[in-house]
Figure 1 (cartoon, rainbow, N blue to C red):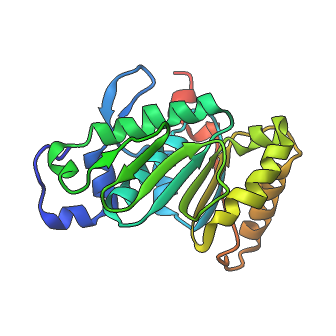
Figure 2: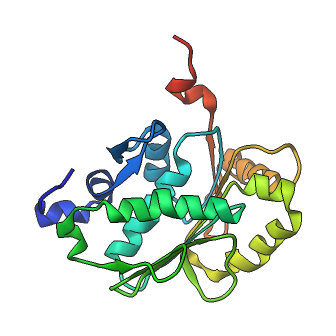
Figure 3: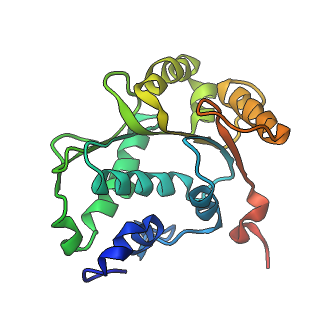
Length: 230
């Protein structure tokens, strides 16, 4: 971790910033430096402006995008980022334990670049004009970075809300900006299932993606070392 100011050229590299400026809470409740695991590394290395992720549980996808978006807001002016969660308590937990925790525990020298204030629940407002909000939906304004967390669960339990996300929240993001939709599987129906099927077929076809296509990621439990018995 960069407890003191590193060479300026180190700050230019996004992965170096991700792994040297931010702390997370691990599964045992310990504060540890954020280091990319295999799933997070795949997402980092294979970026696209529209990404859909079918995943196993507890692989750190939400954590990765929460910190990735925080990094974008912190180091870029007038950036707007948002995370949509299924329930209000989920949104509050993501904001408190992932976004605000990572910001609060940044080195003091880094905060001198860009101070954030927390004027209302679930939102950080930065001195550089950027803002970051976690909620159950967005409809007004524009967004440069948007994560929809556990969209399969939203589609399964609240179809009307899932429709509102697609018709409302996703329309706040410009074509060349970043949208990420991720979830564990929730059956063979609903919009998340349909989006995964469409993105998977595009991937298998080998055709070049357009800005309107979602890139498909499948993060299987079989690839997670902690899911194996010794």
